[in-house]
Amino acid sequence: MKNKGFTLIELLVVIAIIGLLSSVVLVVIDSSKSKAKNAAIKSNLDNARTKAQVWYETNTFFPNTYTAICSTNATYNTTNIYKQVLGAAKVYGLASYANPNSSNAWNTAICNVSAQAWVAEAPLVGSALGAPLMWCVDSTGVSKETSSTIAINTFSCPP
Image 1 (cartoon, rainbow, N blue to C red):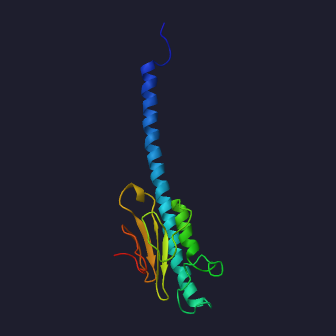
Image 2: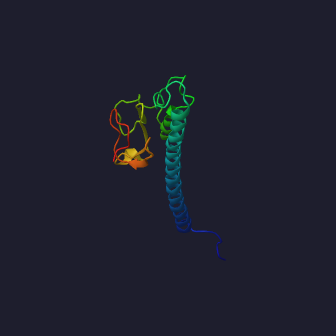
Image 3: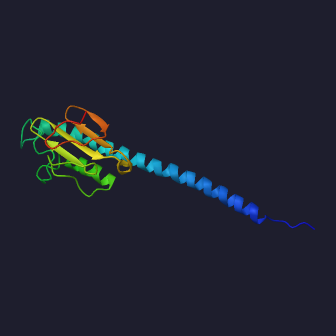
């Protein structure tokens, strides 16, 4: 009479195959999450450009200037880009962003502004693993990934 069932070796082989397949799936899912977070960061900062242009054309506080678009002041932040930059920072996992026109680091979202120009950037997910990756947008229409941060009182994305 033959015994029906699986041997211990057969069971271990099946478990090993299932473990290997699940680890591959987990790596793919993690990569997709990073890409989704980076897409949200880029979207937040790209929306900042639209908000900044609306502010420039319609604000009554400082007509025809970008002044105050980076302000955290409640009087201005309903139409400024502060919330977009903060939103990008939160997607990355930061609680806030640096004060306008301050020094910047690879893990800081920032917005610099002058009367006639502005720039904002935030770190992309995965930046801590190697060279810093930042998403930068500015008033000239530039929207790009860069490996350097914006300097104090600079109002355009790094080359």
